[in-house]
Length: 367
Image: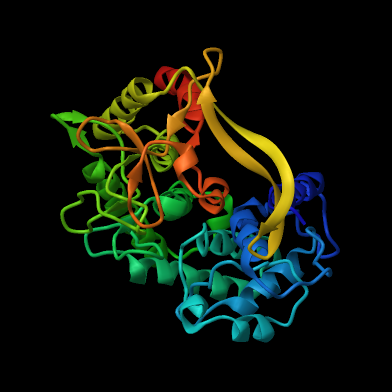
């Protein structure tokens, strides 16, 4: 199965099942939060199964989530949550590190949301217990000053939606989304307090260049809030993909105060200044070739094209906001051709992430 097809097909299946009812009379619950974990499972796991739970089998999926939950309340990453495989065989195939709980690859917060919804509709206590354990994992792992770490560095992490994914979950709790109506007041207040600390961290972490606010890095120091390195090729920088997710989150906050408004405005202005014109970033077809545990038939190019729409680099330097790329070794380069094939297709060096921000910004300002 090709990488680019697997997640696409999953999305189609998910979309087709929306609002259907199952035999337990529980409405279909969105599964899109699990796409990244399943995608990484398909890339790297040597365990394969053609048998999968129906996307409308809410109880079956919820029980699968319970089977993989760790004692600390979190979940290991890169699991196919719909696969009909004995969970013990999957866990035993993982190294000790990969058995640990993490928010990496958009993990743990989707499981909490799903289980909370299942309990809301079913009133089956074990799902409430599991969701509460997940919430407690969020509370226990928050840095004292606010924020959460990812997989690669002991730093406040915006990569993989770690910060924004958790904060969206907590915002839903704060705004009393229906699926969390069962939370007791004490737990709810703890989660709202964690949200407030997290929001303050986001505002403090916004990078300033020559006194002007720009956007965010993938990782920030939990004490100084300065940009720090994650993996060897994730250098301190202004990162567009993660910053776009931050701004989209901030625009979801009802009745934002002035600091939030200013953070959004300054980031949008920086997106406008940092866009690249005159180049086309595109996926091109190639002969099928192996890629980890699967195969791919595409490559990526970044070539001159006066008619191309604006594009953004993933990374911009902290001094001049100049775009750059980075080899796995940490060597800075300035051409996509200088990046090996597996990193060209396995990492988003360019993209169009601010488009959604810019399209929403005008309407947000009116509100």
